[in-house]
Image (tube, rainbow, N blue to C red; front, side, top):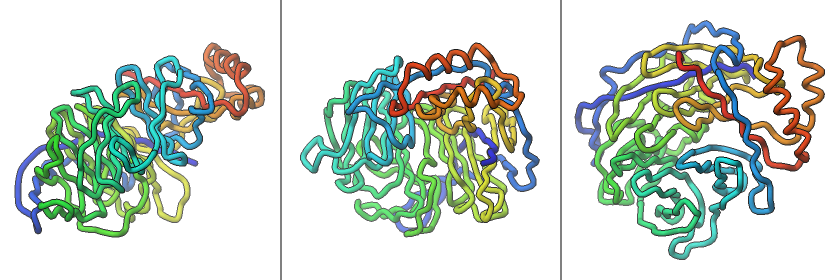
Length: 375
């Protein structure tokens, strides 16, 4: 699979009225264009983008076995990892030790019937989980104990908690009529109690949701939204929409966008150049200085593992990827067939030593790649 990478910054405010009760702040007038059409991607090495690497084995046990990692949030020394296939959120500390997991238990108070999305409440240092089926948010402390819940009567795909207490809600295909306000599909903001304030994106589509689901990234002072319907990119800082980017792309964006993620001034977008093409491209933009890189493929010359360009993030300077224990156990084969590519022997040796301590059924190793300062 070929890859191309993009990091974004986004937003600014003005106002107008829309249909229903939707109050829209149109923030796209001063949008910066990001041209993906006609972009000439390059082949690069990992050392062109990253400077240092950390390897973190995740503890394996009956309560902590991971199967399909969908998202990672990092806060106060904790890695909150969502496993989509198990419908659970796992928490590991900075040493990779398992702390707890959150999973659906039922419909009683402080229980979850399902997990739709999760975010971090930086003010109160809580993990907040939204249950679409019960229309509520359950808050957990950093030890995994449920401490409170509140009604949140919206249909949504994703949500994030801002540092000022407000919520950013992404419901690109869902019309919200569960409250006194009738809100068009798109993205909107509520206050800390879930009272609707305003919309900043209206998509006008319903009943046709498509992947990816991770369009809204980050929390607190660093929230990024890459719409999979309208080619709009936003970065929300300190409760305000700071910049907007508009993607120039001629094909069907709904079907072409593969995945997104972002934090701070950085956002990553992987997409198909043509819908019929299964290969992906990745574009990279630093929203702070608007610099861009368009990548066709990245060769891993840091260590001997066929890891693709990671799309998950720990923070604004750190990308996250995972290598399965099974692949690690095959590492000797990779070392013997690295195809003449010169790698960092120290990092490769460290990973090889780690592989000898693991079994094929162990949890994956989390790999944290630190971006170069100049990017």
